[in-house]
Length: 495
Ligand code: NAP
Image (cartoon, rainbow, N blue to C red; front, side):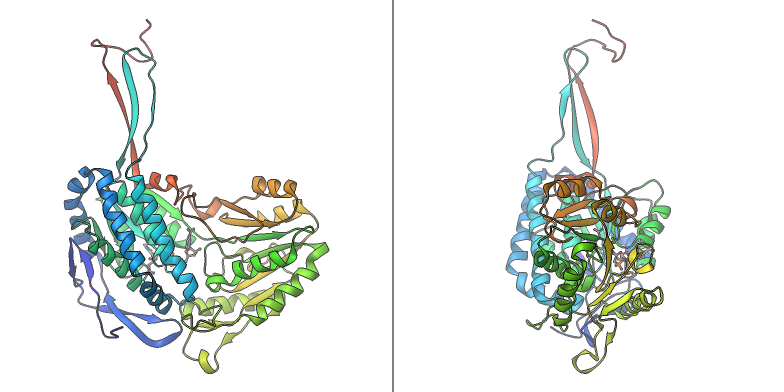
């Protein structure tokens, strides 16, 4: 990789410098001295230019038959497949997660783009009988217009693809503002759409901060829809500033694994390790809480801690590494702050709890896999989304108490139960307040053809993925076709 390379914004089919004339660095979180590339430090003017380009492109793109739009998406998916390994390595360097996970991230992008490309031949509306004779009723799906997509850093290609693919297939034009920690991955994704033949102005990317690029887009009069994935705090600000625009929100999580007394404990430990420490705990679906039936608490905890202690932390490009760094210094400090709070509030630190600073860790943002026990549901580490490799173990007497603890947070994204009982499983599916419940697998592992999203403060009801993923990006038009040849009045005419 050319270390001094400067990437530009993609606006109206051209790679252009920011109006500010300034850049910022994208760095490797496993080695903060390594500057990967420079990116445009854009502001409102650049966003405005991108919105104008998206406006110019809208009529032609939205009029193109959806199956033809789908052909461009299929081509983008094929190019992604060809470049998968190279992109995964770039992502590990920029975001830190280990290679098998970044390959999975690119694969998820491929899968959602293919799924949505196929939607070009469906985009189903529905028909229904009219209450009047010789009259036909139907709905069709039309694009929302120009949409702004604002994304986080933890899934640098998959999350943008979850938004770009349905937005495009539905005929919208896009201004995309990626996270400032992973702009290179976002640029690479846009380059692929360019190679696939996306017409100029249909997909635009503007790099820069949330306040200088993201917020002006949120307020922009010509933007009709905003699709945002990120923290609850930012989601709340966006909701307040967006006015009457359509806003899709995918926010944080404080996800739970329940381990019942009849659970296969080894399987539950596998799930807790993967859910708690995969992606260094930086997944919206990370299993940051484990509620264990008191009869199997000791057995589970002993095995879980033993496995966590053996996890190999390091650079994600090293095939031996099982857990990479945190994304940046402020995230690392935040994780450690929560360790201090956990101790102060009386939880027992069983393993971890330290920033790694020696030897190969000196230049990166590395933290030890950390487990607390004796956590009670109101403690800060049981309530706040830490977004790091910290797991809180809590005890429950029975399933009812476990579900009560599970529901005692403001979030509602993912959940899981380990049990051999079909009754326990179905009760958990019904009663846990979350958008996702897994039985006998961890809190992570969504598949692109099923809806993804949360309840409570995790969102505002939108779902990504699956056929429902289109809904965020379409307006439903209802059409009545009267072929009676006379004036018929609904609700009044009586034959
Ligand atoms: P974040 O700080 O909210 O940032 C997300 C995006 O919003 C970034 O592009 C950011 O830009 C931008 N932004 C920040 N402030 C803004 C503002 N005032 N106006 C407009 N845009 C603004 O979140 P993050 O730290 O990147 O991501 C972690 C969070 O995302 C966690 O809470 C996690 O649970 C959540 N998440 C949720 C899901 C889900 O599907 N539910 C999936 C993944 C992650 P900058 O990067 O330039 O600051």
